Length: 333
Figure 1 (tube, rainbow, N blue to C red):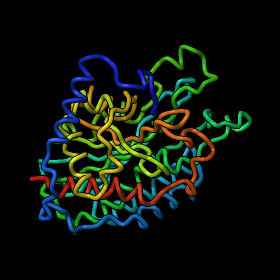
Figure 2: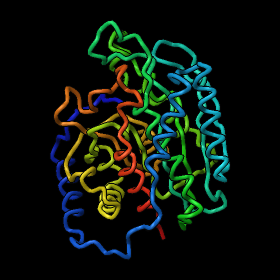
Figure 3: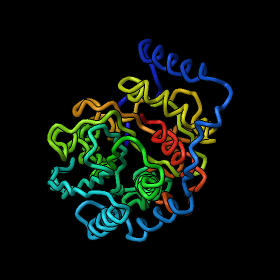
Figure 4: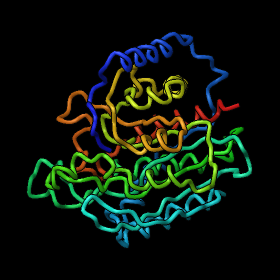
């Protein structure tokens, strides 16, 4: 995930939209209506274990045994919670012209319902720690505890709770493959500037959904939702394509006792899986992704480094994001 656009929100139009979104949240009732608080509680320890379970397979690299086994684990876990599983398999081409086996995993809760919400994350690991401060490690793979496993872990824990939550809509959990194979710093310049070398699995899904004519009310993308020190600002494409969902999600965070993790501040335009979902599949989708103002890059100190390990996952961040989504789903009519 990955930016081919400006890191900071810029331009009068987007600034106006961002300000409008911020105002919309700020003008919400100051007092918390206790009757709206969802009583189903997200278990951060359970989600943390799901992160660890994925990392126990090792880096989940394209064409590797690790990603195959991890994909089986993910599909089996969703199935154990009563989800209907679809494995969408294809071959995509990396920036280096390498053919990459690609398996998007879709887990459907109450597939018979027409009204649906989509929650998604990627489950692959970046093959190269090209942002590592130690240059000697930049060709090593990333464990991807945060940048991949955390989003899937939150989805698995929500899936575990759905029968108890009993939302009034169907829910589709989509695990995208081949998100993080974007061109590294040493790739040819033309490959580095080609934005579509990222998010290969979601590009394929957006153009060829697992069900013909698939529609959802909206989508939520989870990316790096467990790192220590993370907070989640408004992301630019989310405001552009799904402003009302941003407002609803940040409001849900208030009721989830997670407002401090969802500040009403502007982040950046991020090239991530939600872009093809918005622009090709035409499903209004937001990106919950951290924005650090005090790190060398906006994604935080472990991004695309060998330090993206389980030791740097904060269960409380997982809880804040997970409980926010539980709250949001509980409010669907």
